[in-house]
Image (cartoon, rainbow, N blue to C red; front, side, top):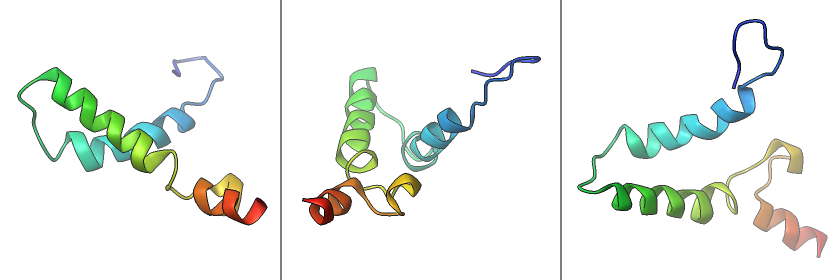
Length: 70
């Protein structure tokens, strides 16, 4: 995302991919690409999006934040 002389910052992308690599990709191997895709999909939709704490929400997960707001 960022190249020499380009002012775009890749921090957001790195923040997203680093936990996926550290918690999933570097710790296991899969027999098929489909198995890897499903594992990554389940991590993103089962943990990263709904339960991971976000600084923009006062370090609360989206689920907790939505319960408080509703």
